[in-house]
Image (cartoon, rainbow, N blue to C red; front, side, top):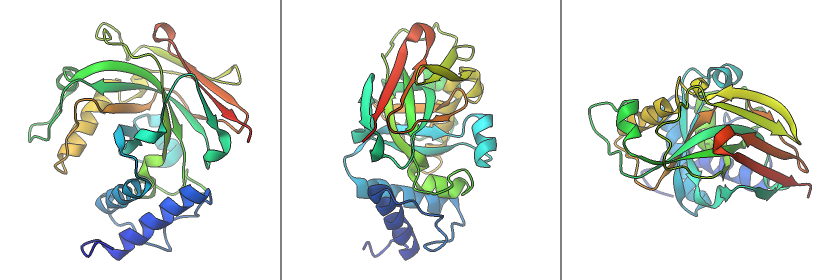
Length: 265
């Protein structure tokens, strides 16, 4: 064990990593650590991601949508790390039983063309837009190590890497600047039936506001966004759950469709 690492953080991270690996969900983290701060939660997240290995491809921002915040009892957004081995191209076919759960979130993501380094002055939406190389419609697959992820609260969700399970990428668009993402409609489908609908305005008013929030949040702890990283900005609509054997898709209109099917075994 790292001699500088708090034993409670190490124990909590090990429990979360094991729960995901074994697909045996935890009631909470109370037996391992009392989470008093978001800094502790992010320290656990970092340790969990390190234990999984395989590297990261970027970031996800969770609870940018007021509906999602209400459902999870969370007051503000949080971040998680996008695992490189969990990024898939649409149409994706994944093993349904590789997940504790399969919550589907249609989202806008950005791939950065240049760095957004940590700095004292806050970023705004125009500042981060200048660093974006591509817009990518995506489905985030939300997964959780907790038995009741809706009730455990923000620190526990953060510790569990923001409940990141996977990211399915649609067609990347480089000439996206003329699109009004705030009013852009996104529809989610389960087994061909529409179940949710929303717009980019549900993401903190505009998906670029989510990207700016992330850049500023990382800068507050001395971290930066790097060219080539993908940032998924948060769900545009309500989320819905797929079971093994189900298929899910998101219709982004002129930006195309993103789809994922989960095998029954």
